Image (cartoon, rainbow, N blue to C red):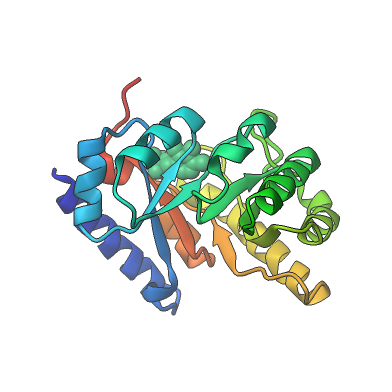
Length: 228
Ligand SMILES: *Cc1c(COP(=O)(O)O)cnc(C)c1O
């Protein structure tokens, strides 16, 4: 199917899931994950009204960002090396992958140097998977508060990547856990702005919507399987 066709299906599934949960679909942002997708594919998805793109690799992000017209907002969703941070400051609407203190400090410094404020999400490893980055949930409150006090950095919410499961129902508890964590944080630290819950990918986005996600990161369901 075409990108437009895929997108129609994805949007319909998001609306249906939102309705099941009694939520307004308009409050859910779709980030099209364009890793490995060539420029032509990205232009096509932009022409279908998508205005948020997600990349997880620095090199690819920089090339695509420089070759596409201004307009779409860019989300950096992958592991960030501290020595590369400078390159994305001022080019990203949101960094989803703040997962350690040294990175928070580096982002803060780079943002201050370029006179901007970097908006970030704290990445949480809710399932405790060794292969994934992200903070253990119990470390998130102190970390988020401390990071939020750094100049040039604004903590806007939480992000998680759920374990790969054949049945999306298996990840529901992890999404619930992330939502609960954000709720408790907000209640305890009113100075934080837990505005975003970035959770839900191709295999599990409907469950994520039902559990309160307001940013979905979707690649395969829009562009087809990745080869590489
Ligand atoms: C690749 C990727 C996605 C999108 O995955 P799909 O299963 O293709 O929808 C979402 N989030 C992150 C962090 C990714 O790296």
